[in-house]
Length: 164
Image (tube, rainbow, N blue to C red):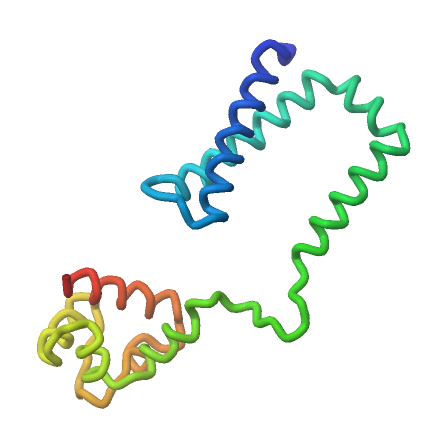
């Protein structure tokens, strides 16, 4: 079955429009609702649509690859992609939320209870429901979960969501 331009091009254009609008909203922190979810998952539609568009227009694409301008443009964009994987010197590769999570995880459970607006007893009960076994107030969440930050975030999400 041959890929038809009549539908490959409009699907690619529509998926690009969707991705572009939501990308701009996310960039300016104006996204809401399902914007980020839609951007992450429907980007796959964009990739598939562009691949189909490329297949439908492959002869034209090949003509661009033999021109100097086409080669330079693709080369420059490939270089930008490669450079995007590098971290500038002095910048840490960890996400910006990691230091506060580490600090909360290292705090005694009594402090974590205050931050979560819970009594120490309520905090211990809720920790028990997550499968952890706190034995004393001086313990920290890191003592209970180990160094696994993902586990710490999951437990804190449960604690803070339940504290509302």
